[in-house]
Length: 221
Image (cartoon, rainbow, N blue to C red; front, top):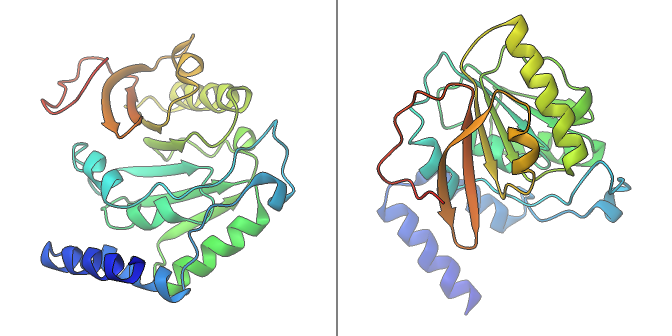
């Protein structure tokens, strides 16, 4: 039954012209790309700094990215990039720079292997606690899939806010499963400008620029 479902899904991707996604899923199926969940006890990480890794890239994220009018003048950081699933999705878009920040050396090694298997070369992965990563001025997009507790998120938002003083610019935050929403908006320049639902979770979109028109397809609380 599982094999028949896999074949049906693969044919559906091909009919829709989703060749990139088809190749990724085929290589996952063959074991050449590893995007399986990884838990902090397996990685030797602290619950005070990390949550488990789960792949959040793919077509549902692309639906969000397509609303953002990404150009070659944009660059993005994925905080808690794990095995690189979201980085793979970002590689389909014209970002001038794509950076993953990941605290686990095990996950960094897997991510680099995954990118090599897919022949993706324009991505940098930095081994770092997210709160210690301050090379932010070159980026104007930041992605989070609930990667760490709110104490870490607070430090990251402070760092991004400080980077706006050094280099004023419009910044967009994409936050999937936004458990630390209050931490983001409390005392920061960021406000929620949009929300998209996916099953029982949501994406929140934040910006430091509030005079923005919101897509008609957005679902807001």
